[in-house]
Structures are given as structure tokens and as C-alpha cells.
Image (tube, rainbow, N blue to C red; front, side):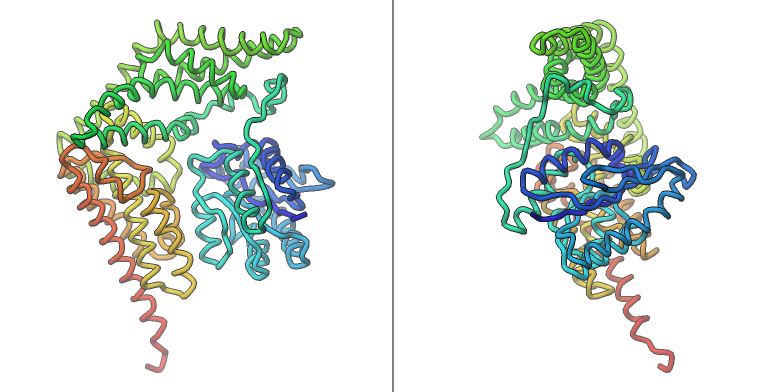
Length: 526
């Protein structure tokens, strides 16, 4: 039986996508690894009281380890105290790795150069396979030479999808037969939930999970522009009308914690309040989840049969939220959504060049500071709901994805160190082929002021072009498809914006690397 170590922290973006629920996370990992005949042998997990994007050294935190086959609360204290305590656990895991007691390492939002350094160093030296999420941590491990089988950012993942991805990667590496365990509900699901229902209300988590529906909508719009497939415009209209229902269902499921029952409640509520747009779907879905949760708790405590519980929670909870949404919430949220889109269009109308440049420059600090997914992404989705494409979506593709692609490509062709090329290549390919994983450029940006400034400049210039050309586009799609999904008649302009962003970032990064290599080659006596 293969033995796994699990290390990391509740992270920044991860905190709102399952990282704050270590018990739920370990439940999923144990479920999937057990199905693959693997076992957890060591854990080092730092659980902060809030997202690490906003936490400070004095914030409260907990350190979890693994004892007697169970999760164990090792220490409670301030974040700085927990980090110090975690170093000793990191040393123990490193010793286990060197002794051959660990066969693979799973990690989430880890710190390869700090509290997890010894474990990663031991894993790299012994050639252990690794699987993890967290853009910056994955990129650092890859740059250190780690054998990362499964790598991705945190955005859009869940505790279950992460556990399945990690286990699948190891099963393939070790040639172990594994069938992911999907669908795990029961009559006492609501009472088994450990997290307070109000803490499960996570706006950006709901929006990110709904993103595939928006991409499907954008694809239909793009394909419908081809004369042969013009009938798909009706499909686009249908999808636009269904988007609030999708968001409502996801919100109800996540908030209620009742899986399929929560989905049913969300669909019922969403259909009734569909005129409220995506903001209405979000608000009404949360209400449906809350109603369903408390109805199910009431029924369980009064020994009502499970079938009736599902009917009451899904049906009555959804109906109550839907009626409130239809008559009270939808008119307000529709007005609010239109107001936000009108404000963006007004800003672009005043000075499109300046608006695009400013958006391009600011989008990097936004994603690095953890603001992007909470503030910018919902606006992107609002724009897409209205038109099928987005101004900020185009800024995302040019200013983030293509700039990251340019930086990583420069480190493949003109690396500062030999190991950088191997670490940068996966990031470049993922950015180009899938339109995501901009965090792959973090190690290079943070280690060079020139590269960092070049990223901001490249994003600003490409953003100015987006404004100048009046481009609207879509993020989170393969970069090679993005121009075809721009607003009608602007595909070539979008391609130009993307190429300028990548080329400028490539040139500046290459210059920084070659300049650094030149300095290294100069000896004191020359």
C-alpha cells in the first residue's frame, strides 16, 4: 500500500474553496486514496482564521498533524507561532521521506521556501512524485526541480476535485487501478456538516463554479457568427436565460450542503426568479440554501422519513426562496446589474485608451492581492451575461494570461538558470492551451524588479489597445480560441492585443535574464 504525506495551508484563494474546512478536505482525500489502495501517513496543515491574503502574524491559527490514523490538532496560537511549530513537523516528514516511509506528497497552498522547505527538498532529492494546487507554490516546487504530476491553480477547484486529481495522478504514476468515488450523500448529511451555514456563503466560490456555463454561452455566440451555424444564436439566447438558474442551483447546493437536494431547491428558486439576472440568481440561491438547510434540520430532529425530508427541503425551500425572489429581489438585482455594466461602458466611452491601460496595470495587483476573484470576476460574468463577452474578460486574457505566457516563454528560451526552463515550460503551455495558470510567472516576477515592471507595462499597453480597438472577449478559454470569441468583427484586433502583450513581456523578461547572465559572467578581475 502506497503511503502519502499531505502538507500545506488554508491559503488565500483556497480558504474560500474548501481550505477552511480541513475535516471535509481530509474526508475527501481519505475517500479517494482509500479507493486507490493508498493511505495517509503524515499531515502538516496550517489552518488560519481567515484568508492568508488578509491575515497577519497575530491572526489566530491551528496546526493539524496525523496521529493513529486520524487528524490531530497539534497546536493553537497566532499565525507566527503556528508557522514556527510547523517547521518541526516539516522536519519529521522530511525524515520519513528520506527513510522511505513516504511514497508521494500531496500539497495545497504550501510554502516550499519556508515551512514546507525540508519536506519538498527531501521529496525532490529522493525523486518522489508530487501533486498539488496553488499557483505560486506549484510554480516554486517546479522551479526547484520537483516531480509534479498534477499541477494547477486553486481557482475553480473543490475539496473533491482536488482529491480526485491528486489520487488519479498517483494511481497513473504507480499503475494502480482507481475509480474516483463521486456522489456521497445520506439521510443525515445536514447534521453531519461541521461548518456553520453562514460561513458557507462564498460569493466568488459560487461564481467560479458557475464559470463553465458562461464559457458555453460564449462559445455558442462565437460559433453562431458563422453563417452555417447561425441558428445557434437561439441556443445562446436560451443559455443567457438559464444562467441565473445555474448560479442559483450552485449557490443553494453550496450553502445548504445537501448536494442533490440543494440543487433541486436552487433550480426551483432560480426558475421563479430568473428575471433577476446573475445577481438575483446568487441572492435567491443563497436564500434557497438557507431555507433548505433549516427545513431539513427541523425534519431530521422530528424523525420525519428521509424521502419526505428531501421533498420538504428541496421543494418547499426552493419555492419559498423563489417566490421572495420573484416579487422582491429580482427587480432590485436586475437594476443593480444593469447599473454596473452601464458604469463600465460609460468609463470606456469617456476615454477608452486610459480605461484599458488602467485596467491592464491594475489587474496584476488585483490578482496578486487576492482581489481579482472577489471583485473583478463577478463583473466579468455580469458583462458576459449581458453581451456574451466582456471588456474586463479581454483585459484578463491579454494582461494576465498572455503576459504570463510571454514571461514563461522567455524563461524557456533565455533562462537565468538551467532549472528555470524546465519549470517555466509547463506554465507556458498551460497558459496558451488552457488560458489559465497565470501564477506560473510569479517566481520570475517576484525575483526580478525588471520582470515585474515589464509585466505591468505589458498589461498596460495591451489594455490600452483593448480600449482603443473596442475589444470585448472572454477569459478562461484556450488562448488560441480567444480571438474567435471576441465581439463581432474584432477577432483580429483581439489577436493583435494578445500578441503585443506576450511579445512585450517576452522581450523585457529576456532582457532581464540576459542582463543577469551577463553580470554573472563578469569576474572581478575582468
